[in-house]
Amino acid sequence: MGKNKTMVTEFILLGFCLGPRIQMLLFGLFSLFYAFTLLGNGVILGLISLDSRLHTPMYFFLSYLANVDIAYACNTVPQMLVNLLNPGKPISFAGCMTQTFLFLTFAVTECFLLAMMSYDRYVAISHPLRYSIIVSWRVCITLVLTSWACGSLMAMIHVSLMLRLPFCGPREINHFFCEILSVLKLACADTRFNLVVIFVASVFVLVGPLCSVLVSYTRILFAILRIKSGEGRRKAFSTCSSHLCVVGLFFGSAIVTYMAPKSRHPEEQQKILFLFYSFFNPMLNPLIYSLRNAEVKGALRRALCKESHSQLE
Image (tube, rainbow, N blue to C red; front, side, top):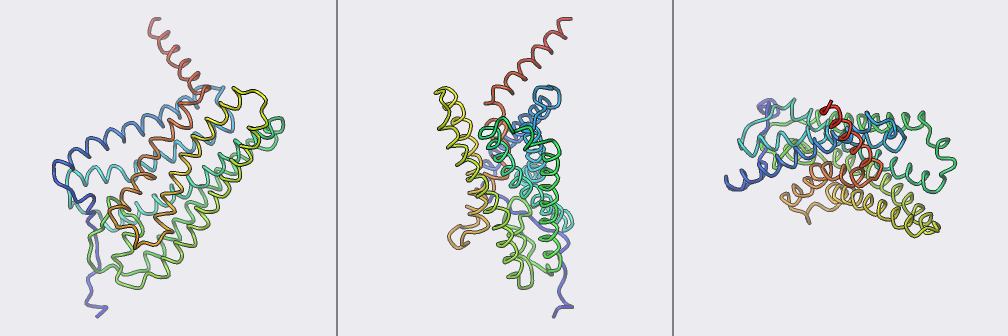
């Protein structure tokens, strides 16, 4: 029987099973969101690279978060937009595996980056006098390289285990991109070992960094309560609460997707969850982490003033 099976060479992404008019409406809306994502993160990268006042560890981590968010969006959103315009257009097996690998790499990297950024804020608020010593440039570079290495390694493990499985049909993926759980459902073999590895990896990648974030922000909260200035307390609390909202949205939707019992969450609801942490989250990060920040606003004003002066000359 095994010799008579035809191996799949391409997949078809079903995307959102909606009417043509609604799909065109979603195409326009998602294209706008995609443009905002690229523009917002691009502006942050430009400001951080051009303004020397932003050459600090905090904005170093933020620049890498912006890079990951841009890569995130470029990996999944164009395929989704193509699918909305031309439903049923196939994606090659190699292209699907590459998309899965890149998505997992960026997802894991962002998990660790968010944990590192929360630790950076904890040190800055709780130990301001020793901040430059604890969070040195060597430490920053090491942490960022470690996050990328962990992301690439995790993705390589999952994709390697998936490539060992036979795919002999059907070839329709009920998703808008090659998400690993949706692809595994099409394998013509027992995938229980893959699912166990995904669950164990989720504990390490999601629960571990989330606990680190919660511990850091709990300590930040106690440090904020010790601030004598009411204005300083309000400013610090406003910043940290907005950060926690983004972190909660990202980790919460990911944990529900990969660790909650699947019988309670139909596939269409899973797609909506993926929209939150693979599409809307990269768009919200520049607004929450940067454009509400006084230093970034100042850098933006200086850049605009400099541009206007150069045009007048």
